[in-house]
Image 1: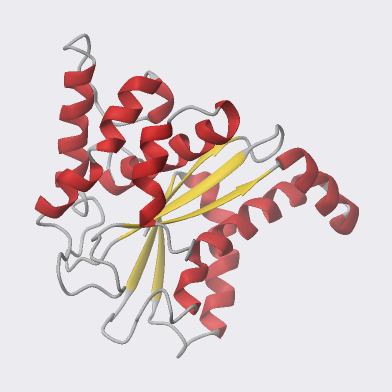
Image 2: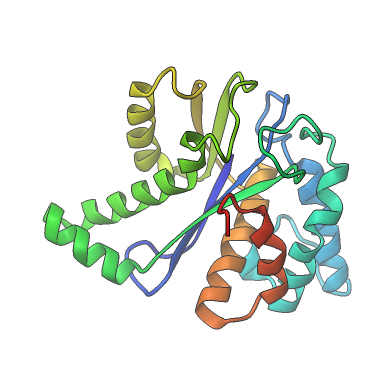
Length: 230
């Protein structure tokens, strides 16, 4: 899984965390989804009419029309990605990339958590930790993911800001040993881990749609990939 966020967890009316899921035998996180990210980057550069060369995919740095075009092509390029499993999938539908999303209002969420915890900074960390728990929740829903053929899992998070929430979730999951395969949490720079760039586009598109009502094409592409039944 690759996890990224859009918005500020400490303030504002929106904060979205997205996790992209795939099955891979590649041992290096930076290799997984490299083909998909590179193809999407080429599509984005073409949609920009050659006006710039992208070092990486960042939804917030692209015009909405380009985000729509780029994410809208995800289902066309993911099936050609040799870094991920295409047929032996641990879920029922045939998409090799799946998505889980968590959205919350930070102003309201932190007010509630601060009333309970008594410390705003700790409340922000709690908000991020709960968001991480939420996007990983399909692991514990056998109707969504069949882990019987999965040997191990890696959760790749964007940058060190996720270190604290990741450590807390890892501690809890260690207690659930036997229920799920071993999980490794890894923080990376998005330039180094291509899958994070795909997660970034998903998080930004979802948040932008909630906030502004646009990115319709991107969200229409992403919606069927979610683990939610409806």
